[in-house]
Amino acid sequence: MNEINSKYRIVPIGPYHPLQEEPEFFKLIVEGERVIDLEINLGYNHRGHEYLAQTMTFDQVPFLVERICGICSNSHPYAYCLAVEDICGIKPPPRAQYIRTIIGELERIHSHYLWLGLAGHFIGYNTVWMWVWRYREPLLDLFELIMGNRNHYAINKIGGVRRDILPEDYPKIEEYLDLLEEKTTMFTKAILDDPVIRARLEGVGILKKEDAIAYGVLGPTARASGIAIDVRKDDPYDAYDKVDWDIIVFEEGDVLAKAKVRLLECFESIKIVRQCLKNMPEGPIETRIEDIPAGEGIGRHEAPRGEVFHYVRSDGSNMPVRHKIRAPSYMNIASNVAAVKGYSIADAALILAAVDPCYCCTERTIVYENGVKKYTGKDLLRLSWEKTEELKRKYRR
Amino acid sequence: MKKEYSEDILRNIEDKFPGVMIKIHSPRRTYIKIDRERVYEFARYLYKDLGCRLSIATGIDTREGIELIYHFSHDPSGTYYNIKTIVPKDDPKVKSLTDFLPAAAWIEREIYELLGVDFVGHPNLIPLLTPDDWPEKTYPLRRDYE
Image (cartoon, rainbow over all chains, first blue to last red; front, side, top):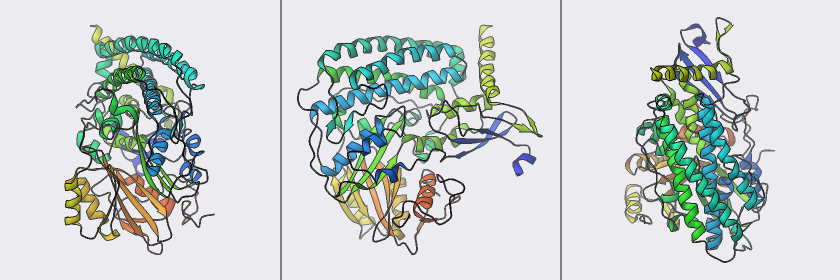
């Protein structure tokens, strides 16, 4: 290849790594320490869900789409059920709407915590990682209490939910929310007050607003770049228009802004869950649907990473004719090309992780220079840690 | 509470693009049918003038041909404008949106490899998801695929 002979070098990141849930291949083209360009290859995890969904009945599809993502596993069945309900023109009963909203928000908290912990790990703050994940753990236990499973909760069904939240569990949820609020305050202060963390995140990986619009980014990535979009506000569904909460927007577009959006969103989620528990209506938890008419429907749900979009077409039979799925990372990852250019390799891992594809992995990364191996994956992680250590020394003086 | 949907926007669309078929499924879900020659122009109008965001595109193999749906989201009103067009199977060509909309680059590659639609003007129309050894001219989401 031409790049090998020129002054540019290629740093391959990926495609497979145990830490990431989405295998992707990032080819960083670098000159010395600076990233000049980025090529993204995907498709290593293409499982043909859209085709599989067309071979299943409407009731079976939620279990299939739940397995698209292991972290926000509630989002896909949620959006799918909204899409099918859009075809039928029905809405689930109020209690089911509130339960869906509660689960959606608890899932957002656990997903943001997961990102925060990983981001801490990648900049060499393993204390942040351990702390954050320590308080994420009881949330997973809470899911087990409510739905019988720590992940893949299978709560959504067309026309409602499959399990009720029992009134005797409310105090347990509220107790946990109190703990969570206290700890999120602590993390926010600890992270925003630490000069080294600020120096590592501030002004790094800036995604400009015009780039964000052109790439159509979603969720916290968009809101950190000054685009105030949120499906929960723009196109409210279920209980989101019955609760009071704010949309968090920052203008800077750097990694710090993305971290701030996620931290502050945890508070909003806590607010929403509390209000839902307080105003939880009584009644049935599902609307029975006899059959699904011919037609087409769109379901949108604001997942932790942005809008999940499902389009379902029915011809009146018991299987969908077409089921289109768009996860938020599909749009967000493409914007890495604009965000990573011009920054150093030590920052690249963090910038690629900042859109929260849970991807920042370096184990398989190798640089060959004149046939000599220069960096291994661990070296790249070490490079990032060294930068933090260097900053620590600088700030100590 | 935001405006349900804007009558003005739809009236402007009808004035600017005569002959389009507008179907309002629900207040925030609008489907608009247009012929494939004007899709590019129409998408440009939605993106540049109305400030819509390209959410995604869907390709469906139907009896009439391959149906393409571009899902545009108008976030200030929370409305989805879905542009539908049909490309015949014997000449599956449509103009690519990538020259003004980078967000379309991946989904056009995906529809190209799964349904065999040729997006004219795409700078890098290579398969996105299928493996490297996938046979050429084999489109897994077409009805005749076995």
